[in-house]
Image 1 (cartoon, rainbow, N blue to C red):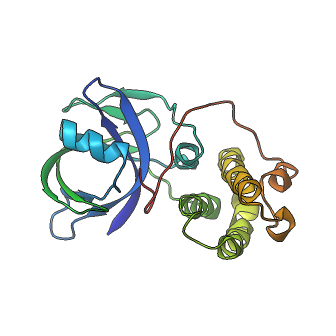
Image 2 (image 1 turned 180 degrees about the horizontal axis):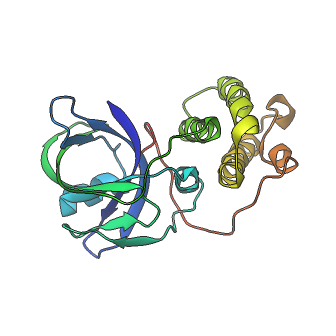
Length: 224
């Protein structure tokens, strides 16, 4: 099973790195996790160096979208059993230690074992808008791998659920992602009219703009 999570790692200077990532959970043992960061990535470097990470379960889709659009400055608090950090907005988190590595030139498998799990707030389920943002975030992470026409077709479908069920947080996150598409279109020299609903069009529907700043990008389920 793969769960879309927020993985937080730290380097030797205790600088935290926040990355959306699809984490594999072992069907045989629920305390075993497989993290598959691509090479090169900060998550991979930090995990190999510190041997620890925090897996955060979060229903604020702005964190997923934010990390993909240069907004990584999210409030954190200390982990309880390891030297790490936890998202303040996490509904639950699991602190893990690296057990072994299956090396690979592109995407090593990092096998981790849970050392502590804590619940902070009840999970009330995702609505369709939250699902739409998560799926759109995955598409954004693959802009250089998937034809723009296919991405637009997926975005058009996801927008249906968004428009019917979104709240302010989902609208803000969606706006960030659509702006990335618009910027990609401009960079690649593609006529924006071929891709309906990019950032400027979404803004007309009442999307918010963000004031936070940061760096980074992600791949996989989502991953960096």
